[in-house]
Every structure is written in structure tokens, then in C-alpha cells.
View 1: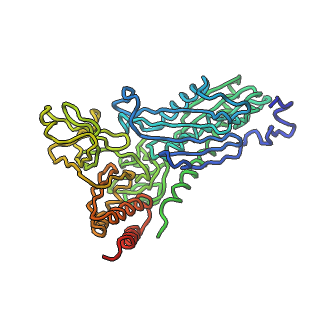
View 2: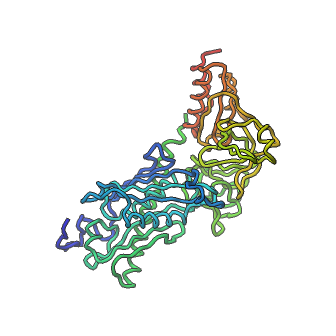
View 3: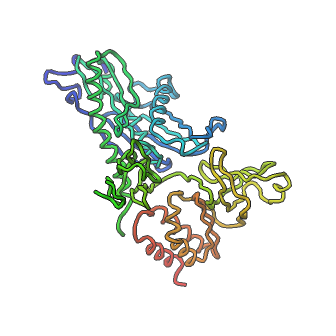
Length: 243
Length: 226
């Protein structure tokens, strides 16, 4: 898509009609895949992501196994049909980097020491990309880990904030990401208000950065709420029906 | 809400909790499935929160088996080495039986692929060791099935009530490993099939109440009155 003339109109509305501090419509579902130990589907507007967790299982190759904790493997991958121009098969440099970023974020909340010598595999598959795939992926991956019964200190909720036409906006879509001035994905463990991942592409003043972070926190608390709802929904369905 | 522990708790009995949920203000009472941080208890995994003894615990819906000394488990011999055996305990775990010398390994009469019922001696940084003083029982025949280890306590039931009922009605000999591997040995294929069906049903409906009665009905229906 080409650059729209303006990313924010006279009424302060964004290209998709949202207010600056509004999230896209979010959909979350836990336990969508039967063959994995845990899975989740997350949708942020046009961004659609599936995450699956396998394990703990034996670490391969064996020499990578650690005697005191499990290793966490993560693969972030975009399907070839997820973007406008077909993405060639295989892992690009960007996907390898994001796999690492997501892995390191997940490692901070997971109690890996519970499973010495084992491996936990996390697969994040982007079905459709419309900006904010790493944050949606991380949100989905933490849900999938929780669904797999993995011991964790907290869930991870993530969202991007950015600067578009000089204004700070929450949850960038693809157009805003491409043509905006700055893009800042933030992931947090909301229970302890700790920042787990923060990247910044573009320029922001210190004051703008502080406001962006506050905006991200607001979005994250909404996402966190939805995550908990999604988890509880799945397990209350399958759990105690008084027979 | 003020709990039985004489401290504030932030959950109702058997509430479904998610990782990171605040459960109590007394960090000293942190039990299985929870963790303490800055003097407070939080849930570490998704499950039912409850108070057991004087601890706050979360009973998980799913969890990987964690070996504890004294557990009886079912395993498959996966390797024979000069100084012992390697036992596959399902999923991610491997146990070892250490033998002092080659001769004892030879005389143990175990081969790759054999199914054994053994006791865990210790589990730690050096891996899972299997007790060889208590008998290593080689299982000659039967159906080997696997259920989620988190469901094993429900399968056994209170003082073995559930598993004993299945054994009684079907007439099967059932060996349940804490790791979720189960061997069923019955008088007829029908009886074995009924036992497998009951166990699968328990795995799926572990949290529902009145399960024992429904299992009994299912078994009676499959076996017929007799």
C-alpha cells in the first residue's frame, strides 16, 4: 500500500478510524491446537498469530541440555502468505532475530529450573501480518506456555506504541509502522510492572518516550486483562460441571 | 476474605487461578504450584487454588511429571550400558539404573524395549536414579497406555478407591506409574478395553464431581452385570 496523505485526520482519527490511545479489536483463544501441549491464537486487528508449545521434552542435540534447567527454543516465523508480497520460505535475518528476542523475553518469566535437562519448544507462526507481530506473538506465546501448564512468574502482555504525524499512538498498524516517525514495541510482566522487552525504531524526545511508555502500560493492562479472561474461559469450560 | 490460615487470602476455594495471580500476603505459606515474591504468594501455573495443610497450593490442570524419591513409575528400557540401564520414563525424562559391574547387568535379564515397574531413588542435578534394592519388576504382558501425569492422583482416587473399583469390576491387573504410564493386564480383551476406556474418561473429566459413579456405570455397561 502507498503512503496515505495523512495518517491522522482533522478529527484526530487514525487511518483505521481509531483514536490515538485505542487498541485494535483483540481476539484471544487458548488451546486451539490438539497436538501441542499448549497453544493460543491472538488477533490484533489484521494481525493474526498462532503460538504452540511443546515440552518439556528431551533436548536435542543432547549436548545442548543444561544440567540445572531446561532450555527454551523459540521460532518466530511468518507464513509466506502473511504479507502482501509472498515471503520466500525459510527464516530471514529478521525472523531469526525476533525468535531470539521472544525467547529471551519468555525466559525471564518461565521457571525453567523446574525441568533440568529438558527442552521447551515455542513456535510462533504469523498467519497474517499487519504491524505489531512480535508483540502479538509474545502475547500469544505466553498464553500458550501458561496453557501448557508451565510454571511462570507472570504472563507477558505486549503492545507497540509509536509516533505518527507528530502524535503518539497506541498499537500501530502496518501503515503507521511503515510511514510513521517512530515505533516502540514494549513487553511487560504486568504483575510486577517490569519491562521485559523494549525496542525503539525511529526518534523520540525523552519526554515523548516517557509518555509513550505510559501509553504502552495502559494498553498492556487491557491486554493482560483479556489474556487472563481467555485462560480462565478455556479452563472453566473444561472444568467443574457439577454432574 | 480471611482464610483458615489466619491471613488474608485473595481467592475462593477451588477458584481457577492464572500465573502471576496474587493469592496471599503470607509468603511463608507458599506451597506446590505457587511462588513467593516480596513476602507474598502468587500462582505459578494455571489450576485450582486451595489451602492444603498450612500451605497455599495450586493444583495444575496439566503439568509435566517431576520425579520424587519413592515414586513408583513405569518405564521402558531404552539402553543397556556396561554399568547399568537407561529407562525412558515418558516425555522428557530418562532414569538410570546403576550397576556395579558388567556381570550384574547381564544377570539382570533386561533388554531394550522391556517395560519395567521401578522406584525412584533420587532425582537431582545428576539425573534420575532408580532404586535397585527394591525389586525391579519386569512386566511381561499387557497394554501400555499413557495419560497426563497430573491426572494420576485422580485415577488412583482417595485411598485407591477409583483404581480399585476399576480393578474389581474389570478383573484387570492395573499398574499405574506416577509418571502417567499405565500397564493393563486383563482376563479378556473386552475387560482390558473397558479399563482403558474408563482411564481415558478419568483423564478427560478429572475435575468433575460424581466421576466415580459415572465410571462405575460406564464399566458396568461395558462389562455387563457379572
